[in-house]
Length: 265
Image (cartoon, rainbow, N blue to C red; front, side, top):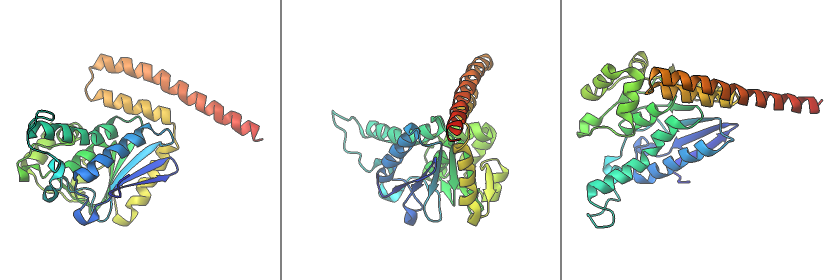
């Protein structure tokens, strides 16, 4: 794994840290590729019950690092193998954006531990997570209007779902920077903590989730994700099916734990 993406395991909690603190963890190809790989590994690792994403230093993620070329640094002139620069850029960025898809879709809870400023693609990564625990120093800025960009890393989709299309349009079109308190008041952050307490409180919640009924959380998350797009009746069918699957799986786990306790005397 790249030294720009740090991995920690604390019990059943996987902590993924963006590690370019001198650039407020701004994204380049050298960090976006291993970040997507880290999320894929966390999604498939059965020992992981909850994933926490955060940034090193005083910020979460400042978005794409334009000074370093962002996602397009490796783009080459048009050629018959990889197409035009636009086509190359699409393929490259879409691959990096798997980070957001994985955080949103993986069958385990995900938490963005927003330890400072977040902007641009960073708000897409934060929005992809199920929960956002933020420090009071954690400002929020869409920033895409400042560079004439449309938004990436799922940011327009996630924030329209999280706060509604009206607030999302305000955030993206007016592009105003929000303080941690303002972002929390708008529902952008799930919980707001003093900076010194953020890590302890986030990991407390993460361990509660990791130590809880993992199959239950898997199907809860699936139901919640389905509800974002599915028709009403289809959602009812999925809930009925997932209720049986989750309770059956949880009961099997509890029976096994009970058997192990009996064997240990």
